[in-house]
Length: 225
Image (cartoon, rainbow, N blue to C red; front, side):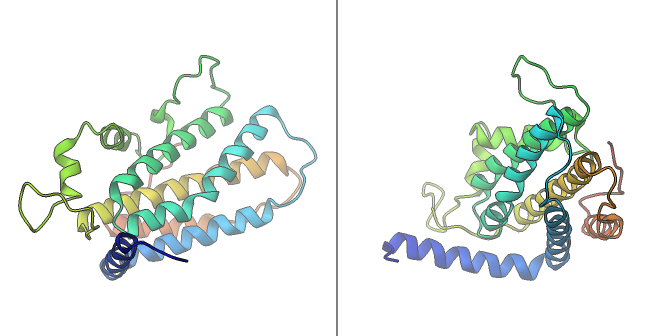
């Protein structure tokens, strides 16, 4: 593949950011790998036709599949230092998760308004406003943190840098999204395959939750169904 000089520079910088991120947040990477294995277990189990699919289940099947499809992209954005771009996809995932919960609880509306993120588990709703602020570029002073240049205050650098707090916060939120989706897939499969033993994910959920508590992202685990 032929790359421009800028692309090569950006890729090299992203590689350096990833190295820093992996060294700094080992517990979070353990949690990320654990929740990834949890999702794989559920996805593998769900690769068979159910006997009956309700309208609610049909919508949730599509939404969960699309979320799983892009998980690795978010991880790459965060670990490469593209925090602003990561905020947009994290926000999209938060809305999608909320819509999945609405379909499960049969509370969807025809008015096509954005889903209500207050129905999300793990007290994730407050993060939505922060992500929206970044996506709408209304937090200019925050965006400036992503492009600080050593050349001076009047110069913005496109080269990604490792930002310790952003890396930790975004990866933690991403893991929480994955964990919430794992629960939703389990609820979905419990409806699709009522006469089949669904994979047991309790131990994995507890392990991931404990790691998020250990890193300070959660004070305790509280599941809101």
